[in-house]
Amino acid sequence: MDTALSAGQDLEQRVRRELTDAGFTVDASPVSADGGLSVWHDPARGVVVAWDVAAGQLIRYGTVRAAVRLALRAVLIAAGHQVEEDRNGLELVVTS
Image (tube, rainbow, N blue to C red):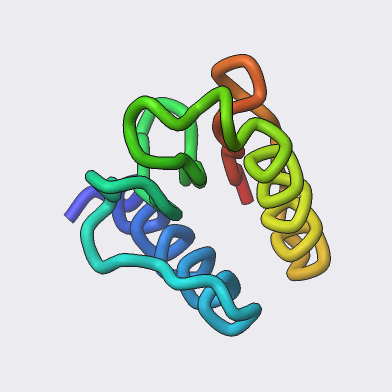
């Protein structure tokens, strides 16, 4: 197995565990189809963490999305991860 791929998958598992321990529900699948928390490894960027609402509810829940993103960021930084925003602030990318 490629060492970089393995390291990315290990980081993804650590991020999932940190978020679960903090009380977030992290689905087993990388991307939640019905909204909620999504975590996946993108080899080009790092581990991507995104929280979204069901289709068509984006405007209605913009404030909630901002609060959840702030909470996710706080949990990940407190756990010692390097976190950056991506996609106009819609995703958090964990690089270490």
